[in-house]
Length: 383
Image 1: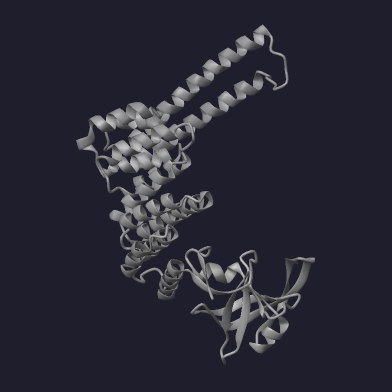
Image 2: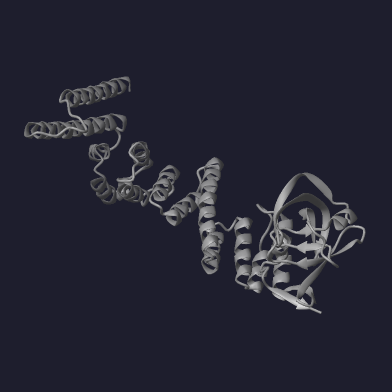
């Protein structure tokens, strides 16, 4: 073992000397970036290029010899192909020797490929790793590396599937946590893209697939139920919710979605007053507020008398809101508890209504409406 290390150090030193001499030769030629090349200069450059190619070939040979020493238990042809970066030939070798591949091949592959990752070789390296994994499908290290290469190539769905392969047979809990963390990051990116595109049907299909691939995640089933509700497939959404536990999501979150589905299916019930829609809000102690439903308001706002009546607490901050008279600055409050449409909101942040509205205590904004219903635009009017 000491002799092998000594020889490895010697060969690495030899490689360093070769690179130094190559750099010295290039520097001595006096080439400049802005110069005009003469025929003699071109001839010199061609000679230098040939020398560089020769040096690279020598480097590959030295790398192969080092790999041969470090992995003496592996076939010389394999280590030579690996060291020289002959990826397509290496892929053929792995396919042809499928039944002979052991985890030791994976150790050599991971150690070498990790140091050679770049966008130019990524496609070939993915093929090499997959050829090895066909023989050793549970090599977690090779799977992580393959997932990284797939993400490098923009293949997020393929990278996610590779991580699921790890989660099917993780080496230990630490490996499982790492795979789940990386999978969650990819899932979040894909979900955001689907949301931004408004691709509701694609999103439902995506979460159905994810929940099937990771059946132990209740959070994934919750997202499937939500996506079904957004498609107004109420009964299916309820069935999925009934099958959802609380292993990685709070029961209150599940209950809130269930209530939102009920509200969305029957529509939110508001009273009609001419061209206006009104809703009643109830505070602890029985104080009732009459609010104008305003789907153009991002936040709920209450008049100062209403804020005092429900003992709202003012915060040390202000908000700028747009009104018919322009943008104004107003106070921000916290309401400890407020019931709207059968749903209790706690620690609700509201703003002070800059001007009082006759017969009204405030405006009911989208911050509340969107939480009341899985489909907040589905509003029924009564009265």
